[in-house]
Image (cartoon, rainbow, N blue to C red; front, side, top):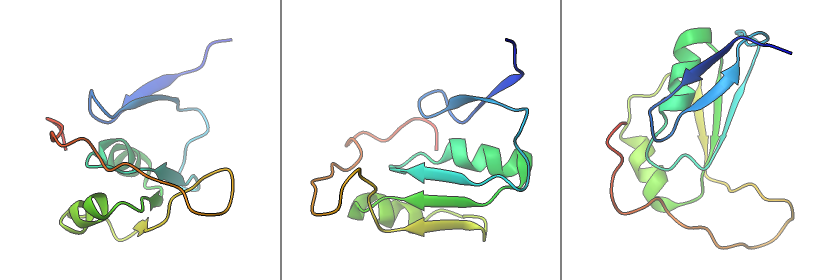
Length: 100
């Protein structure tokens, strides 16, 4: 089977996706935003879809507050896991990515 694909985002934080069913009715769920949100922003720019971003780490949340985000880019200060309860999270690496 062949499907049309396109790569979105920076070289270090991008993904290739099947384009066929993406539209303004799609929703991007970003789990662990770190300090590179280029993938979600590229999808938003291409399709106008809303973004739900999840990251509980203080450094990522502080970084995100300093970014010019679309109004339908919502950041939730929670982590997602396969169970309820407390878990440990790591923040992004100390070196900043070249692409933001």
